[in-house]
Image (cartoon, rainbow, N blue to C red; front, top):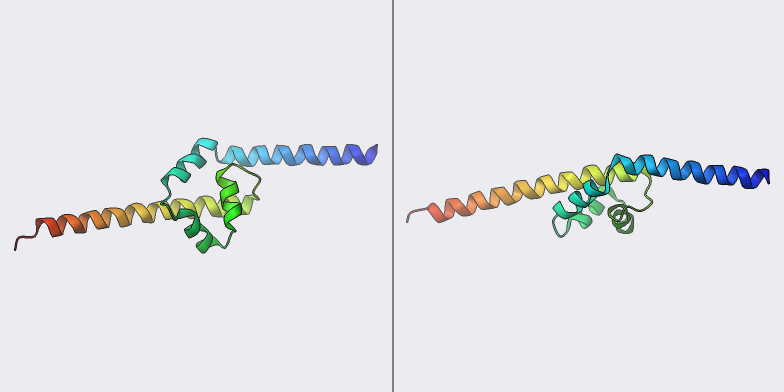
Length: 103
């Protein structure tokens, strides 16, 4: 009985910890990041962090992912979004320069 109570308290403690962690990133924030990523965003996160793609997908599905991995995915994901937007703006600027060139 004591062992069952101890296991039950550990399970409840883990669930409480997971709730605290997932309150760190709301579902809306995770979805915003997911929608902002380029098509190859998950692969880029995988290449840069070494975190497996299934774990990255699990993070975006608000699954059970360890905190250090969550932080890496979160940070690297937003870096990918930032670089994608900067590259897109640079390409648009270059295209505009080419269009405006007078021959």
